[in-house]
Length: 101
Image: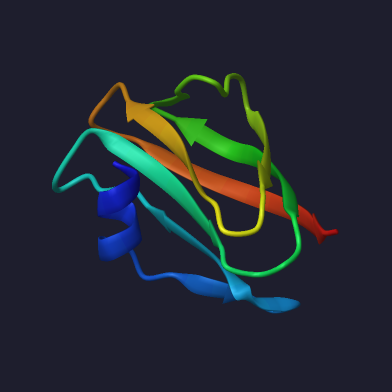
């Protein structure tokens, strides 16, 4: 899934670190997953808290659970948050807070 996300998703750079990217997609037409993707090509560590303000018809997959996910992406690493779609009518929306150190 990480390889597919890396190649297929439209990655957006962080405003304060253009060498670090994120992407989000529901992938509903292809799979039963939602995904948030991170790629850190910078020299700094990305730490981000993701709060799912809407999480209808999705469940966070291991190692995440509940309605929040804390991620840490080291330089040169990629990471994904996977969400399993449990019903056809589904939606997720997030608020984000991040720092680079």
